[in-house]
Every structure is written in C-alpha cells, then in structure tokens.
Image 1 (cartoon, rainbow, N blue to C red):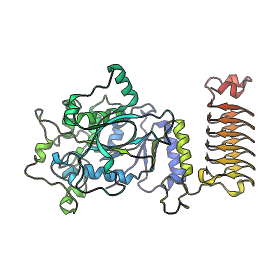
Image 2: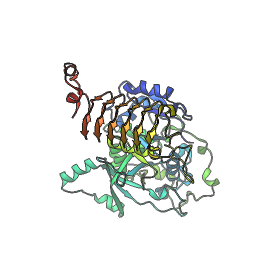
Image 3: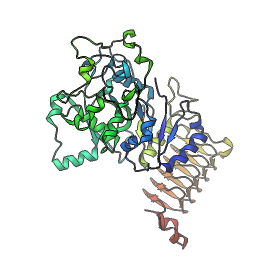
Image 4: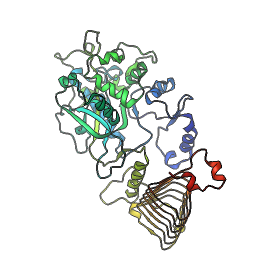
Length: 497
C-alpha cells in the first residue's frame, strides 16, 4: 500500500540531464525510497500528446497497478498522503465509501481489489484568483455535482468537504470557442435529468494531479483518438457518467466487464490492479468505522458490473478535489509570471531549521535562507532576510541592497546594486550600481554597470550593456543573427524585443 514505484517519463533530449541531476543534485540524491527511474523511448518528444505517452508499450508495461500522475511543472505544499487517503476512502477504502457505493452495494476490497465495483478516479483543481493571482494565468471550466454527506462529520483539515463528482471539464479557451460557435453554452438534458443541482466553476485550474485506477490504461489504449489526459481521458470519462450511449462509444463496456481479459496482462490481477493481502482478507468486517455491506435489496456484484448491451452500464465516478484556498500552495508554474511569483513566495517561507513559533515548516522551506558563506558578503550590505533566498557561492559586494528576491548559486552582485522582487538563476553577474525590479535573469547572463531594468526578462547567457534602460523588455538572441552581431551590431540592437 502506498507509492511503490516512481517513473519519470521524458523525451530522450532531457534524459541525460535528469539522470545527472538524480545522481548529483543533493536535493534529489537525498530523496527516500523508492528511487525514481527514467522512461525515455526514442519516439518521445516535447510535443508528444500526454495520452499517447500512456499508450506506449514501455509505459504500459511499467505500470502494474493503480497509479498517480503528476506534471513536471507542479509546485505543491499539500501532502501527497492526504490525496491518496482521500482517494482510498472514496474509491478504494473500507466499504467502498464513495459516491457510488450505494449502487455497488459492497466493499471494493475483494479479489482484484474491486469486487464491489470498479474504482473511480480523483483529480485536483485549484483557485487562480486572489491576492497572489498573476497575469495571463490559464483557467479551466468545470461542472461538478455534490456528493452525499457522510454520517460522521469530517475531521478538521479533511479534504472530504471539498470533493465533488466531476461532470464536465474543458479549458477556458475551448469553452470560449464553443460559446462563440453556438452563441451560448448548450447544456444537455441528460445532465439535468441525472443531476438537478450542479455547480459551474470558471476561475479554477486543473493541477494535472490524477489518481487513476489501473483499468484506465486499457481505456486509453482502446481510444487511440485520445490526445490529452486532461481534456480527453478525464473529460470524456466525466461525460460518460451521465451522457447516454457515450460509454459504449468509448469501449467502456469492454473495459469495465470483469470477465474481460486484457491482452497485455495475465494472472488474477489482470486489469483489476496488483494483488494485495486485502484481496484475501475481508478488512471491512474488521473495521470499527462505517462501511457498506452487501445486502439482499442491493443488486449482486455480478448483476451490477457485468452488463449486456441492453443493460445500462454503471460508470465509476471521477471525483474532483477543488482546493479551497491559496494555502497550502498548489500551482503549475508554466510561464514566466508564475515562475517569478512562485519563487518570491518560496523566499518568504521561514527555513525549516528556524520556523516561526507555533508553526510547522512548509515542505518547500529551505534549510537556510542565506546559504552563501558570510565571507562572500561584504560589509555595509542590506539584505532583507525574511523575503530573500541566496544560494551558496554567491558574492555580494559592499553597499548592495537585496529585498524580496531569489538569487542562485555562483552569482556576483556588484557594489551598490539594488535588487527588488527579482529572480536570478545560477552564474548571473550584476554590474555596479545596477537596479533590477521584478526581473527574471537566466543562467550566466550579465548586466552592465548602471543598468536600470524593470519587469524585464533576460535570456540565458545574454549580456546587457552598461547604462541600459528597459521596462517590460525581453532580452534574447534571435537565431540566425549571430553572424551579424559578430560584424559589429551590439547585443541590445540584435536581441531586444
């Protein structure tokens, strides 16, 4: 029980960098077991659709049970154990205490782990609006239905009150296209007939955190037109729970039939998930908590799960955990604004060696706020420690002022430089008396003496000249202009846009 294997799926172009980081980066080498391994088929690229990844034979062979999917751009303070526990209680726990347990009529811990009905899934969405919202943040549109409340009230901090059944999800851009084409947003009668009370959310974003039962791999494999896990796999699954006939079009009858034998797996576990001790022992009867049990007025397992073309097909629910606040942090960092804002948030966290009284350190806290040696910081510098992170081997000259910023390792900050609300990658050199406000500087780039930059982005390795002034600019070298630059054109003339 728990996470037993970790696979990092990446294109070959990134495999070497990941392998090196896992072997050398102290933050990664100190990770507890299980250690991650890398899956990097030659056919993968940065543009390979996410659903296509899970159809690849190498990935299908690597996944042998229920699985958790995480994106590469995720920053999350929410404990993973809380999500796994919520999913197990709702979809795989004692008594199958989920939204559909009244239909399944029994525990889901029989042979294959799903004797009382197939397990459903769980996804995570988070709020994008609020004090820490950023420009150009993508959002998703979702429709949910309320779940029956449990007989016992949830404990403080439980995720259960924020879990609902997902009925529909798509990106806001797709929703905008639909409303423009249809002159409005059409709602099917089948949705209203089955769920009279629904909730529509427009300011949340899919975190791309999914807990999937093992049978989802078969669903993805059978539907070769699926490209996106979020829009196709989750989106169509959610719609199939209420739209008549859609489940058969998605081949879910063959997927969910317990007599169906997967072509890819043999043995008792088959497409039901890995075998556990729970398959042999009726833990529900040993529990003191409320659990559903088989009773005469419920349909039998066989009549519930095994369906004929004339019988309605019961679709396991896909549940949505809608994160209610901005703390603990859940965020996908996939643009420069989010990168800067998230980095500055991390800089405000107290170190886990010196937490605030009466508080628990964040899992994202650093061991030291100022990790560079004191001998590399000249006298008469002004560093606002509560809002600043400085990595090792960074040199800071006299009279420099640093506030609300993140500075990488091996940087050089010139005398009299002023940095506010900025992010500096490793190896950046800042000239004397330069002023940076709200800037992002790539690795090994340089800022000339006396430069004044506000809300600018500087590409990796780019050199900004002395006395340069810019607001909202992006300094970068365009491909094909290197020869012109060698003939006398300055960096700023060639690369600023």
